[in-house]
Image (cartoon, rainbow, N blue to C red; front, side):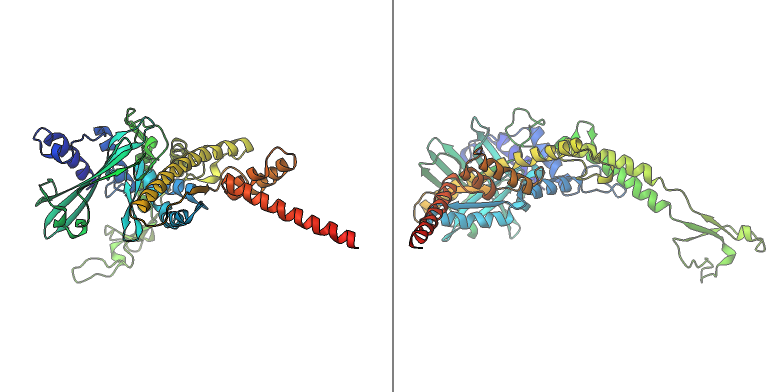
Length: 477
């Protein structure tokens, strides 16, 4: 479905530019290569357990979902974010907490498809949020840092067997920001159809056809890009899936794992213990067929005519199962998937077969740590841009009094560092004057520099007051 929408939109824009129809409505070209379009569809299929190689005999191990889920879990576990500094900051913080409540699930999809956009929009006296996966938005332009500056979002609705499509075009124009809405109606979901007024659809009736916002220096959405190099289209700033490098060229490790797992399951099913018994040992039904007490256990032998010979009455069959060979082969593939996806050995593979020397454990943890921390940085940039967009909408619609704000983030780093050991080391560094007290608070409590210094000043003031009272007490005594 998403492949059809993406290919349809791209083809429509490219093909109809010459006819002048879409060029008047959008007047842009999508910055996405055919290789990226195909890859996006492949990643979605794999993530939803619909890989092209899956059949009634080849089952999915669910590796794409497992990889994306594990990275999203490690990135967001115990994650905290706080916006402070004013009444406006309190409003933004309230919205941030709502985003955090959904962030793990949405980050998982973003990791699976290489990216996502979080787009806020006014909804009465509040803000609402759209979470748009990478195969549902269409980048038009990027800045020098690879950030999306112009983008098309597609909203579709089906009403009375008619298909309605709204193109929402966000475009950065220097310090100005333009949002254009165009609606179309068609009797076929494969075509864009004729342009119609926005009022034709109740849900779009309140939208403006064109809005120009001044004094804006970045897009009004946050873009999360999965932070690995794009080896599908090296000229594209778009991200790729967190499991994309496990399917390089003809060596699709995920496909091989699925097929090997399916072969193992087939061997288990086909290797069930059975008793082959002479047909004369069973009663017969009305059709003169033997009645088997258990069809999985009992199999019939041709009539021997020699019931007196017990060796001909039944024969037991218990085949050998090549369990060890299959599981070791599968584990070797899973380790390769872990390595290619930047995960520590034992994340997907069997931990008992993982080398456990101190150096090997540290190296494996550092691989996962690098993956997780890079993803956290990308997610933080997305949330910073999202806060900016929320602040702009709050000003335009007067949702909260103007004011400054500062955001602080705290991520769990126990993947590679023992938190108790790190905390003790930081305390020693403070005692040795190698680490400032406010730096300690920033690291351990996730405070901003300003908040940490204010807290230290308050503690020092209280400590000094206590010392003064103690000295006065001694003098009176």
